[in-house]
Length: 122
Length: 107
Image (cartoon, rainbow over all chains, first blue to last red; front, side, top):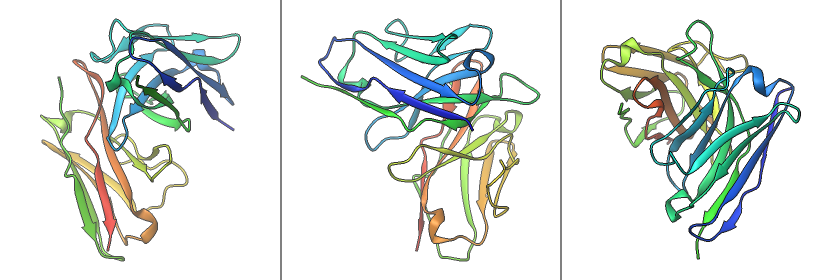
């Protein structure tokens, strides 16, 4: 059974750093596309970042240069290092597994974690 | 960057058909995926590649995509279908893009 469990969220002051983790089971993180998607309170979904199975990484413009996505193959875990946090980064952060059939660019998210809340406030 | 436009809300009576649109420039040339999100829960995939249904999703859920509009259709709507629905595509300029979401209200 595929499971994704996020952790690491909490209250952090503006300018601070936080690292989110997403422990996966039932599949191999390094063989899949893995993404972080966030949702500000009362708002819609916003894609944050992806790490492809080959290791390439991409980021939304809103977090580029501040966030870093990575994975630990030995722990089958996905991470999101968040630096220089701002109030507008306050959101529930979901990790999600990307899947595709015939075109690897047209991927979708077939499994999601339950999310971890990050609150940036003084 | 690529933009997907959804109506903020759609209302439908039980047993009727709900149609939720997702507009984008030449979206018919892209693959559109749809998610259902109920309050306090993570999103759930309900349609992928325009019209495919994951296992466990009722046949009442269907999708289409042509021109500048993709549509999620929910037939014989039930109270349990009340949720927010999001469309999603991949675009070379933005990577993953989500629509703003549509709140489906069952009257």
